[in-house]
Image 1 (cartoon, rainbow, N blue to C red):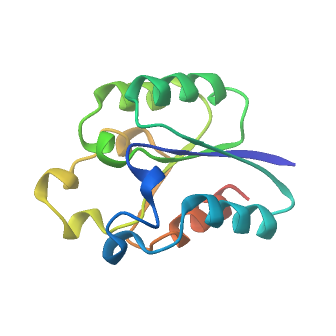
Image 2: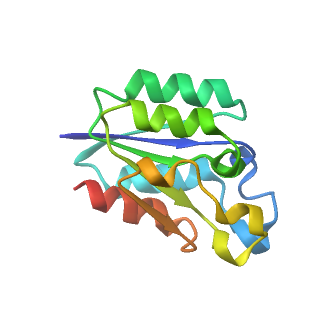
Length: 138
């Protein structure tokens, strides 16, 4: 059985409340329950933090034992050399996911410190991007 973790970064704990016109009205916790139900043949875990160092620590913790990491580092995608280096330093493949189309937003969001070391990048498909990432590992 494949073991995959979703790691979400800052402010994604506010999904369902924050800017629903961009991020939708579902909480991530509700969506994650649906994912677990839809992918019973996968061990799915979820971690969220607003703290950069905690995200790096989690990548180090799971980055040698899991079959896949789905990482939505949110705003840290565009600012954190440390998270980019953590992705580069681990063995588990990482798919970078963003709910919104980051290239249709502010110019600073067009740069990713994660993408050069990721298996792939999925953005602009809402929460469905997480499902596409899971499928890429199956």
